[in-house]
Length: 276
Ligand code: SAM
Image (cartoon, rainbow, N blue to C red; front, side):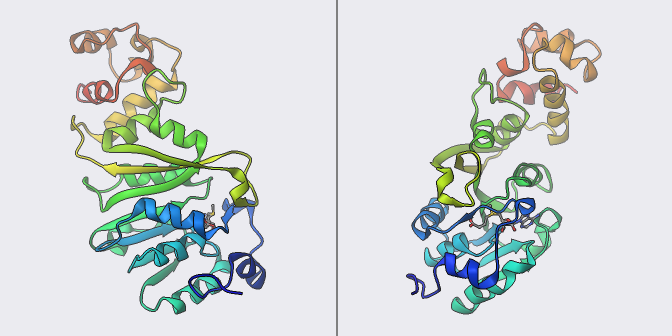
Protein backbone atom coordinates (compact mmCIF):
# COMPACT_ATOMS: atom_id res chain seq x y z
CA UNK A 1 0.00 0.00 0.00
CA UNK A 2 1.25 3.51 -0.81
CA UNK A 3 -0.01 7.06 -0.29
CA UNK A 4 -0.52 9.95 -2.75
CA UNK A 5 3.23 10.50 -2.96
CA UNK A 6 3.97 6.86 -3.75
CA UNK A 7 5.82 6.37 -0.45
CA UNK A 8 4.69 3.87 2.21
CA UNK A 9 2.24 4.96 4.97
CA UNK A 10 4.07 6.47 7.93
CA UNK A 11 3.14 3.60 10.25
CA UNK A 12 4.96 1.24 7.89
CA UNK A 13 7.96 3.61 7.75
CA UNK A 14 8.17 3.56 11.55
CA UNK A 15 8.02 -0.26 11.62
CA UNK A 16 10.50 -0.71 8.80
CA UNK A 17 13.08 1.60 10.37
CA UNK A 18 12.56 0.69 14.04
CA UNK A 19 11.56 4.26 14.92
CA UNK A 20 9.87 3.64 18.25
CA UNK A 21 9.30 7.13 19.69
CA UNK A 22 11.89 8.32 22.22
CA UNK A 23 10.66 10.64 24.95
CA UNK A 24 14.13 12.13 25.44
CA UNK A 25 13.97 13.50 21.87
CA UNK A 26 10.46 14.91 22.29
CA UNK A 27 9.14 12.48 19.70
CA UNK A 28 5.40 12.63 19.09
CA UNK A 29 4.83 11.72 15.47
CA UNK A 30 2.03 12.77 13.13
CA UNK A 31 0.88 9.99 10.79
CA UNK A 32 -2.11 11.67 9.14
CA UNK A 33 -0.93 13.24 5.89
CA UNK A 34 -4.20 15.23 5.64
CA UNK A 35 -3.25 16.95 8.88
CA UNK A 36 0.41 17.51 7.98
CA UNK A 37 -0.68 18.88 4.58
CA UNK A 38 -3.01 21.29 6.39
CA UNK A 39 -0.05 22.47 8.49
CA UNK A 40 2.07 22.80 5.34
CA UNK A 41 -0.64 24.84 3.59
CA UNK A 42 -0.67 27.21 6.57
CA UNK A 43 2.91 28.14 5.68
CA UNK A 44 2.32 28.44 1.90
CA UNK A 45 3.09 29.91 -0.60
CA UNK A 46 6.45 28.17 -1.02
CA UNK A 47 7.46 29.54 -4.42
CA UNK A 48 10.87 31.23 -4.12
CA UNK A 49 11.48 30.08 -0.52
CA UNK A 50 13.73 27.50 1.09
CA UNK A 51 11.69 25.70 3.74
CA UNK A 52 13.56 24.83 6.93
CA UNK A 53 12.07 22.01 8.97
CA UNK A 54 13.27 21.09 12.45
CA UNK A 55 12.91 17.47 13.50
CA UNK A 56 11.43 15.72 10.45
CA UNK A 57 11.53 12.33 12.24
CA UNK A 58 9.89 9.75 9.96
CA UNK A 59 8.95 12.58 7.57
CA UNK A 60 5.19 13.16 7.85
CA UNK A 61 5.45 16.95 7.68
CA UNK A 62 8.41 16.80 5.28
CA UNK A 63 6.37 14.78 2.80
CA UNK A 64 3.47 17.20 3.21
CA UNK A 65 5.72 20.19 2.47
CA UNK A 66 7.01 18.50 -0.69
CA UNK A 67 3.51 17.41 -1.76
CA UNK A 68 2.30 20.98 -1.30
CA UNK A 69 4.99 22.20 -3.70
CA UNK A 70 8.07 23.13 -1.66
CA UNK A 71 10.99 23.00 -4.10
CA UNK A 72 13.78 23.20 -1.54
CA UNK A 73 13.45 21.75 1.98
CA UNK A 74 16.30 21.67 4.51
CA UNK A 75 15.43 19.35 7.39
CA UNK A 76 17.53 19.11 10.56
CA UNK A 77 17.16 15.87 12.52
CA UNK A 78 19.09 14.70 15.54
CA UNK A 79 17.89 11.10 15.60
CA UNK A 80 20.27 8.99 13.48
CA UNK A 81 17.60 6.26 13.30
CA UNK A 82 15.42 8.52 11.12
CA UNK A 83 18.05 9.17 8.45
CA UNK A 84 17.35 6.07 6.33
CA UNK A 85 13.62 6.88 6.24
CA UNK A 86 14.43 10.45 5.22
CA UNK A 87 16.79 9.18 2.49
CA UNK A 88 13.78 7.43 0.90
CA UNK A 89 11.95 10.76 0.75
CA UNK A 90 15.05 12.41 -0.75
CA UNK A 91 15.07 9.73 -3.45
CA UNK A 92 11.36 10.24 -4.20
CA UNK A 93 11.86 14.01 -4.63
CA UNK A 94 15.27 14.31 -6.34
CA UNK A 95 17.13 17.52 -5.56
CA UNK A 96 14.39 18.93 -3.33
CA UNK A 97 15.28 17.68 0.17
CA UNK A 98 18.53 18.18 2.08
CA UNK A 99 18.80 16.45 5.44
CA UNK A 100 21.23 17.78 8.03
CA UNK A 101 22.00 15.22 10.72
CA UNK A 102 22.53 17.11 13.96
CA UNK A 103 21.25 19.32 16.74
CA UNK A 104 19.05 22.19 15.53
CA UNK A 105 20.21 24.28 18.52
CA UNK A 106 23.78 24.13 17.19
CA UNK A 107 23.11 25.01 13.53
CA UNK A 108 24.68 28.19 12.13
CA UNK A 109 21.66 29.36 10.14
CA UNK A 110 23.44 32.20 8.34
CA UNK A 111 25.86 29.79 6.68
CA UNK A 112 23.27 27.04 6.14
CA UNK A 113 20.33 28.87 4.57
CA UNK A 114 20.76 31.25 1.65
CA UNK A 115 18.01 33.43 0.22
CA UNK A 116 14.39 33.79 1.33
CA UNK A 117 13.34 31.12 3.81
CA UNK A 118 10.42 29.98 5.94
CA UNK A 119 10.60 27.77 9.01
CA UNK A 120 7.96 25.08 9.49
CA UNK A 121 8.11 22.53 12.30
CA UNK A 122 6.33 20.23 14.68
CA UNK A 123 8.88 21.08 17.35
CA UNK A 124 10.25 18.69 19.93
CA UNK A 125 8.55 20.02 23.07
CA UNK A 126 11.78 20.13 25.10
CA UNK A 127 13.62 22.55 22.79
CA UNK A 128 10.74 24.50 21.23
CA UNK A 129 11.08 27.60 23.40
CA UNK A 130 14.92 27.85 23.24
CA UNK A 131 14.81 27.46 19.46
CA UNK A 132 12.18 30.18 19.08
CA UNK A 133 13.99 32.52 21.46
CA UNK A 134 17.24 31.96 19.56
CA UNK A 135 15.63 32.76 16.21
CA UNK A 136 14.14 35.95 17.65
CA UNK A 137 17.25 37.21 19.44
CA UNK A 138 20.34 36.05 17.53
CA UNK A 139 21.67 37.69 14.39
CA UNK A 140 20.52 40.69 12.42
CA UNK A 141 16.94 41.92 12.22
CA UNK A 142 14.96 41.62 9.91
CA UNK A 143 16.01 37.97 10.23
CA UNK A 144 16.87 35.34 7.62
CA UNK A 145 13.34 33.84 7.72
CA UNK A 146 10.10 35.37 6.41
CA UNK A 147 7.77 33.34 8.62
CA UNK A 148 7.72 30.78 11.40
CA UNK A 149 4.90 28.21 11.34
CA UNK A 150 5.34 26.12 14.46
CA UNK A 151 3.57 23.52 16.52
CA UNK A 152 3.86 23.98 20.28
CA UNK A 153 2.13 22.62 23.32
CA UNK A 154 -1.01 24.76 23.63
CA UNK A 155 0.26 26.32 26.86
CA UNK A 156 3.35 27.68 25.05
CA UNK A 157 1.21 28.89 22.13
CA UNK A 158 -1.01 30.70 24.66
CA UNK A 159 2.07 32.44 26.06
CA UNK A 160 3.25 33.51 22.61
CA UNK A 161 -0.16 34.96 21.68
CA UNK A 162 -1.26 36.32 25.11
CA UNK A 163 -2.76 39.76 25.68
CA UNK A 164 -1.76 42.03 28.60
CA UNK A 165 -3.64 41.11 31.76
CA UNK A 166 -3.74 37.41 30.90
CA UNK A 167 -2.10 34.80 33.13
CA UNK A 168 -0.13 33.66 30.05
CA UNK A 169 1.32 37.12 29.36
CA UNK A 170 5.06 37.12 30.08
CA UNK A 171 8.63 37.38 28.79
CA UNK A 172 8.02 35.13 25.80
CA UNK A 173 4.91 37.13 24.82
CA UNK A 174 6.76 40.43 24.86
CA UNK A 175 9.71 39.14 22.85
CA UNK A 176 7.48 37.47 20.23
CA UNK A 177 5.04 40.34 19.85
CA UNK A 178 7.74 43.00 19.83
CA UNK A 179 9.44 41.41 16.83
CA UNK A 180 6.55 39.63 15.09
CA UNK A 181 2.86 39.66 14.46
CA UNK A 182 1.50 36.49 15.99
CA UNK A 183 -1.37 34.37 14.72
CA UNK A 184 -2.80 31.35 16.51
CA UNK A 185 -3.91 29.15 13.64
CA UNK A 186 -5.54 25.97 15.00
CA UNK A 187 -5.34 23.38 17.76
CA UNK A 188 -4.34 19.76 17.21
CA UNK A 189 -5.83 17.20 19.57
CA UNK A 190 -3.38 14.95 21.41
CA UNK A 191 -4.91 11.89 19.75
CA UNK A 192 -3.41 12.99 16.40
CA UNK A 193 0.08 12.08 17.67
CA UNK A 194 1.84 8.77 18.25
CA UNK A 195 2.40 8.48 21.14
CA UNK A 196 -0.19 11.05 22.28
CA UNK A 197 1.33 13.80 24.44
CA UNK A 198 -0.42 14.79 27.68
CA UNK A 199 -1.84 18.05 26.32
CA UNK A 200 -3.36 19.68 23.25
CA UNK A 201 -0.99 21.29 20.73
CA UNK A 202 -1.44 24.46 18.67
CA UNK A 203 -0.06 25.80 15.42
CA UNK A 204 1.21 29.36 15.71
CA UNK A 205 2.47 31.57 12.92
CA UNK A 206 4.89 34.43 13.58
CA UNK A 207 5.64 37.02 10.89
CA UNK A 208 8.69 39.23 11.54
CA UNK A 209 8.08 42.98 11.62
CA UNK A 210 10.25 46.03 12.10
CA UNK A 211 9.51 46.76 15.77
CA UNK A 212 7.62 50.01 16.34
CA UNK A 213 10.06 50.90 19.14
CA UNK A 214 13.63 49.97 18.27
CA UNK A 215 15.26 49.13 21.61
CA UNK A 216 18.10 46.65 22.07
CA UNK A 217 16.79 43.09 22.33
CA UNK A 218 19.11 42.08 25.17
CA UNK A 219 18.07 45.15 27.15
CA UNK A 220 14.41 44.37 26.52
CA UNK A 221 15.01 40.86 27.83
CA UNK A 222 16.71 42.29 30.92
CA UNK A 223 13.71 44.48 31.67
CA UNK A 224 11.13 41.72 31.12
CA UNK A 225 13.20 39.22 33.14
CA UNK A 226 13.20 41.63 36.09
CA UNK A 227 9.52 42.61 35.76
CA UNK A 228 8.11 39.11 35.24
CA UNK A 229 10.66 37.45 37.54
CA UNK A 230 8.65 39.01 40.35
CA UNK A 231 5.31 39.31 38.55
CA UNK A 232 3.25 39.71 41.72
CA UNK A 233 5.33 42.71 42.81
CA UNK A 234 4.75 46.31 41.79
CA UNK A 235 7.13 47.63 39.13
CA UNK A 236 8.69 50.15 41.53
CA UNK A 237 9.97 47.09 43.39
CA UNK A 238 10.59 44.52 40.65
CA UNK A 239 12.56 46.94 38.44
CA UNK A 240 15.05 47.87 41.18
CA UNK A 241 17.61 45.51 39.65
CA UNK A 242 17.45 47.51 36.38
CA UNK A 243 16.91 51.13 37.50
CA UNK A 244 18.28 52.85 40.63
CA UNK A 245 14.98 54.65 41.16
CA UNK A 246 12.28 52.92 39.06
CA UNK A 247 9.67 55.62 39.85
CA UNK A 248 11.88 58.23 38.18
CA UNK A 249 11.75 56.23 34.93
CA UNK A 250 8.17 54.96 35.13
CA UNK A 251 6.34 58.20 35.92
CA UNK A 252 7.65 60.27 32.96
CA UNK A 253 6.56 57.42 30.68
CA UNK A 254 3.04 57.55 32.14
CA UNK A 255 3.39 54.10 33.74
CA UNK A 256 2.12 53.81 37.31
CA UNK A 257 4.95 52.65 39.61
CA UNK A 258 2.31 50.57 41.41
CA UNK A 259 1.43 48.65 38.23
CA UNK A 260 2.48 45.01 37.84
CA UNK A 261 4.33 43.56 34.84
CA UNK A 262 1.26 41.97 33.27
CA UNK A 263 -0.49 45.35 32.99
CA UNK A 264 2.13 46.81 30.62
CA UNK A 265 1.86 46.68 26.85
CA UNK A 266 4.67 45.39 24.64
CA UNK A 267 5.37 49.01 23.63
CA UNK A 268 5.66 49.98 27.33
CA UNK A 269 8.40 47.39 27.80
CA UNK A 270 10.23 48.61 24.72
CA UNK A 271 10.00 52.23 25.93
CA UNK A 272 11.37 51.14 29.31
CA UNK A 273 14.26 49.31 27.62
CA UNK A 274 15.20 52.56 25.87
CA UNK A 275 15.74 54.12 29.32
CA UNK A 276 18.32 51.56 30.51
N1 SAM B 1 8.15 16.15 12.21
C1 SAM B 1 7.75 14.85 12.75
C2 SAM B 1 6.24 14.76 12.80
O1 SAM B 1 5.60 15.81 12.74
O2 SAM B 1 5.73 13.64 12.92
C3 SAM B 1 8.36 14.60 14.12
C4 SAM B 1 8.05 15.65 15.16
S1 SAM B 1 8.60 15.23 16.79
C5 SAM B 1 7.50 16.21 17.76
C6 SAM B 1 10.13 16.12 17.03
C7 SAM B 1 11.30 15.68 16.18
O3 SAM B 1 12.43 16.50 16.50
C8 SAM B 1 11.76 14.25 16.38
O4 SAM B 1 11.97 13.63 15.13
C9 SAM B 1 13.10 14.38 17.14
O5 SAM B 1 14.00 13.33 16.89
C10 SAM B 1 13.61 15.70 16.60
N2 SAM B 1 14.55 16.39 17.51
C11 SAM B 1 14.58 16.37 18.86
N3 SAM B 1 15.56 17.16 19.33
C12 SAM B 1 16.17 17.68 18.23
C13 SAM B 1 17.28 18.58 18.05
N4 SAM B 1 17.93 19.08 19.11
N5 SAM B 1 17.64 18.91 16.79
C14 SAM B 1 16.97 18.39 15.72
N6 SAM B 1 15.91 17.55 15.83
C15 SAM B 1 15.53 17.20 17.06
